[in-house]
Length: 527
Image (cartoon, rainbow, N blue to C red; front, side, top):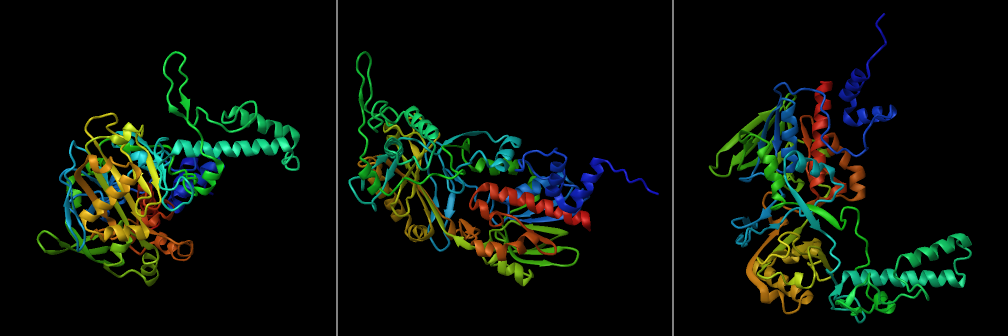
């Protein structure tokens, strides 16, 4: 009779062949041996490729991650990319960058002093471990991206009251809102309004907290001018205590229905960016792969499967020659709006799922200024939030601080209908709209220091993107998305469309690639 003894190592290998890394992690948790639940590095692949061929469609981050990891296991990998360089949406526009809108104008970036605009992804939160993994392993240096700078502004032209059409320092509005709420809580604690909601001991603890927070006067527990809010005139030496700035009245803030929303966990105050531009991540991945793996200028027209492989037809956009590429398996990392235009033999349920999410139009506009006038207002990095159509977020550069070489400001990050409006304008009119918005925030300064250099990119007008990303409704995610997770006979899917929770983020592209290669590993193990 065969022995029933089996080592943990062999058991886990068997579990991995059937269920993949997720099943292995479940087993490890049963033995209290697992690491954190969130994967911070690529999945452990069980099977060696042994020369099996893999065709990857699209040379963006998802495609290059798939290639990097599958080559480690001995797969013969080829990437077909329609453009002349890899990176997909991970683009930084700098001097010499050419941007062509479908049916529109051609721009050539002329930013001075080696400055740039991240026209695709532009910030990395600390919890996006997959992105940070490749920055570390590929030696892509990072620097701080200041997402919340307290002297950046709120600006509302749609609200009512005395603060309408005024640049309000975020620290002042944020502190005043908290201070007035603290005062109201203190009054409720004092007049007995909380007696039926909390024990007296807890009410006393609450009052102690309100005192220790430092926003209320320690004697009468009223909200007054304070150091957290800041000074209208900063103290000098000796006996000069300066002048504390006077708070906005509670009524003014209640009328000012803007700027009170908390950022989500993906948008903390301090984030990261690669030194020299977000495209340095793409360049790091490109360096990790042999040049011969890429076939550039390959515009895909057909994807066909058989029982034992995949055939992809493409046109060389430089020569016009029609060619084919074959492989045992294929991972499509193409944006869904683009993939939907390609002739395939995918099942009806997969075709229906690929068309289910809505294409999201996005426009980014960056303008260069010869003097860093925002730093004269103590704004170092950070984002000014407005309700000016098309200019919800105005982002100041976190690099070259205190320099005398000026800087590039993201003056528009337009989404939804506002992006269509801005994207349909001429380049000159886009620039005028950007300067108009900046003049509202910084009167008399934006036009004075604008050096005439700008770049804008309408993602929905890019031939090989056709959208900034796609958005899944909850209904379609439940009903149709599972078909894409399952994939086709020989084709699996990766890219931003496969990560509904991380719309537009690089982490979605990378983790979708991890999912695809793990699924492929499991398929081959079971074949």
